Figure 1 (cartoon, rainbow over the protein chains, first blue to last red):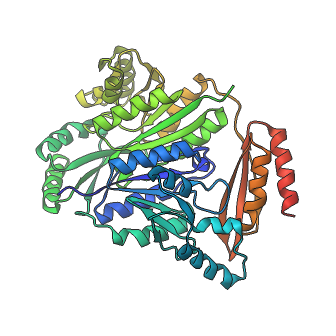
Figure 2: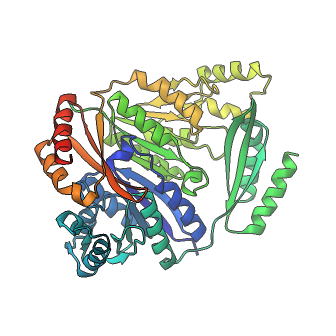
Length: 239
Length: 239
């Protein structure tokens, strides 16, 4: 059986303008690979309702899981929850269980649960909450879409809450050989090897260091023994 | 007149698997903002022909410029040039000017211009070359799609070659105020300010440092004086 597929939507003008460097994509990609879920596509989009709604609809229909990051805080530019509700045609309102989580959290620090903070308890109808051990305000899962915060520490905690609830396939195994030859010399034998092992994926990632040219050849697949076979043949071709 | 729009396509299984952390998106986003070109969307996709072709077609039709990174080296997994040709229904073959660039480059180091390396001289019909001062093998522009290498040093050099040829609009100006209050306290006044300045975009990016909560409030727009006005009102609200 093929592995489940996933897509990610990174939401935020600050990423597209270059002000903020996204780190959530790299974190999620590694976690999904370990969990045996194949990340097939990532889209980075701005804080615009129509753009978010159509991306969520398109990707929710195309992949087994969709993960979003960003736009679920208390300020006016946090529009992700509304867009998710709109994408699935369900209502959204402050929900009692989410409000209770926030009330407990803010009571501890003597902070007022004002109207802005209460926005973070607005949950689309039918969604289940994603635990946020870092700053309380929950994420949520609606159908196959997992909606999480953009702040990296919170995003990572929410990924940790969600991933164990999903069923993955076989983890992707990858092995790397560093070859100190120009990619142009590696290409021929590597192409032949890729034909000989159709179930494996072989990638070549060139580097240039201290005046030397070379490439990291990465062989990926789900079958450890097959990867080892291919690795042995690759090593033999470049002694 | 609104600024020209742009999209980016990052091509590579190694990004989606988490093996490689992409840095080209962050580089390009900053460069485009400075040039007055609005980056509206980024897609990260794998090394699959159909996926690449349809992403190129969709984004070329939707935006003024499309920038791609990755997949134009000499190995079998470098399929971007072929996909660009397919996306526009044009032929692709080794072109004399690109071959001459490679021949000169490899002659200097006494390296053979073999069949694999010659793949990098395959250019779709009608494209113009993008200069690569780092490692010679050129990128190319076909219609509104700029096709560049994935290796960050080469990608950055190619961006440097392409950007001055494009006409940008007014550079996006952004100013930031650091406020040491919870986002929930900032949200109300900030929302009112966003309504009062409809031409400006206001973003709130929370942080938590040394036990203190706060947010960086970023006001963006093309009109410096208007941004200053808004900044003064924001500072007055949080003395």
